[in-house]
Image (cartoon, rainbow, N blue to C red; front, side):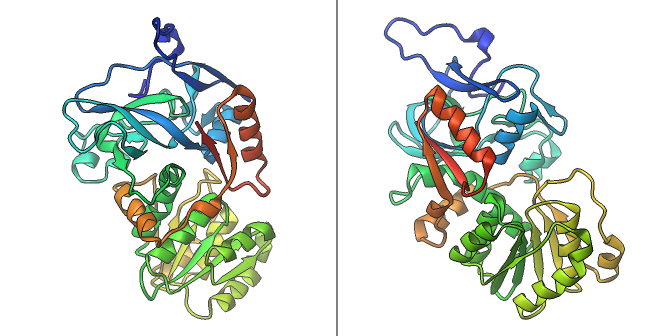
Length: 367
C-alpha cells in the first residue's frame, strides 16, 4: 500500500482517547463506504496532514463505475481521492521546510528516485510510482494521511486550501503547456472544455499564449470557457464526417495559423481535428485519454512535420502552479462548482453529481 495508510485488514480500532481516522473506501462497483483507515508511523522525512479539501477527478468516478482503468484494477478495497490539500499536524525529524500548522498542497505520486526516469528528471514516468488512489495504493479522501514531506508544498498566504487542492488538475494543464512549448506569440487550440480542458486553457493563458480557441460539443461548457478567457469557442458535432468543415471553422475562429493544439478529450475525432487543424511544423499534444486506440490521419500530419507528443501526469509543477495562483495569473475558484462535507450521504451524493456532469465542473469535499 501507499504511504497514506494501511488496508482494512490492518485498520485496528483507535486506542482510548485517540481520534479514529476515517476514509472513503471504494469497496465494489458503485459502492463507497466511510470506514476506519489506520495510518502508518510518521517517518523521519514524512508529515501527517489533516485533509481539508479534496476534489473529485474523472478517474475517481471511473474507478467507482468500473473498478479499473486500463491495467490498473481494484482487487481489494481502496481509499479514493488524490486532489488534496490540508494542514500539517506532525512533522518527521528530517523535514526542515515545514512546521505544524502549515497549510500544504500535496503532490500525489511517490516515485522511486532510483530508476533511469527518476534520475533523468522525468520521475512522472517511474514504473514503480506509488500514486494516490491508483491500485493498490490508497488515496487521500480521509481525515488524515501520512505523506513524504518533500511532496507537500506550503501554500502562500493568499491561496486557499481549495485552490491548493486544485493544483493537481492544474498541474496537468501546466505540464501539457510545457510539453507543447506554449508561450508568447503562440496560437493555441484546445479540444475539449471539460475540467482538464479548462485548466489547460488557464495554463495556456498564464504561459502567455497569444490567442486561445476552445472546441467542445457542449454549449454550456463553451460559455464557461469563454468566461475564463478563451478568445473564441467553436461548437462541434460528434460525427467524424464533419471534421473537414469544422477544421475550417476553427481556423477562421483562430484568425491565423494554429501553432499548438492540445487534445484534452482524447477521442479519434478530436485528435483527427487537432492534427488537421495544426499548421505545418506545429505541435499537437495528446492530453486526454478518451480512447485507448484511435484511427487518425498520421500520414497527413507527418508530411507536414506536425510533431505529436503525449503527457502522463506531470512533474515539478506544484511550485509554478502555486506561483500562478499567488500572483493572480490563474484563478481556479470559478471551476469549483459544488461543495460537500464528509458524511456517508454527502460522499455518495458528491460522486453522483460529479458523474452526472452537466453544470458540475469540479466537485470539492470540505473536511
